Length: 310
Ligand code: FEC
Image (cartoon, rainbow, N blue to C red; front, side, top):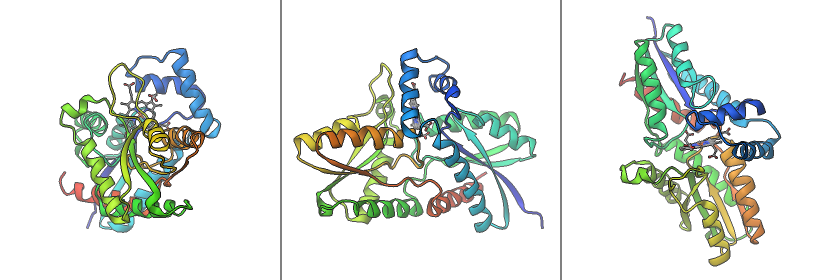
């Protein structure tokens, strides 16, 4: 019996591969508008600060796609799932991934993004581009829109929160847990976007399972644009907690991100940590999921279920 062959377009944000690529990458994020020299320098400095010219998201995405391929093979031996990468802001772009599937003769495919929460401005953008390209090549495609309450995802995050709480010398009740995610322009709330509520649902599920009652949700990494973004920013929350509420121990669990990358390694590990320390606080972060086997099983499960809907 021949196996059913299904392409899996694994989509992720994308990152530059070297310092020279920062400018075209940033221009792509800004929908073709080049950044000013000042904006470019500010971003370049942040990349330099994290690991001196290495771009961790590149390798992390490669590893996640390889690990998902392996997990799909082990869990679903009767179907031939073939994984392809499609990145939002760097090569191989989403359209490149779909073109490669078409060249390989793929007729049916599932799209999944390495980000668990749906917003029309995040996942919606990935899906729109993949759909448009797939239609050009006659590929039938179905998309996983979110998986923010998947039991394997929650298990993996619960494990990380419990591990990170051990890093504090004070009783757990005295540690404020900040669940965080990338901010988006505030207009998504009027649009009825599910993003804020899905993030709260993930946060509540982790809090329930860990027994953490002392928590709140914070927005991080807002863009530098003229429109208002969801807030307050996590740095404002940290300052308020330490300086006004006398909370000295803070654990950040960035539930909106699944990999080590700039927004985690710079925005949290450098910016938030330095701020907390300068105010006399102690701040830690939960480890990123990266290629965690539980996260991979979560992805494999949602992909296999979506394949039934093509
Ligand atoms: O490590 C890396 O090289 C990449 C880290 C990175 C991730 C990431 C994830 C998300 N973003 C989302 C939304 C926006 C919106 C804008 C925006 C801008 C930037 C800039 C950089 C950047 N993002 Fe990002 N994002 C990452 C990096 N992001 C760099 C440009 C400089 C800056 O503002 O800091 C604003 C675009 C505009 O100007 O109009 C909106 C969302 C996610 C999480 C979901 C996902 O992964 O797709 C949402 C990782």
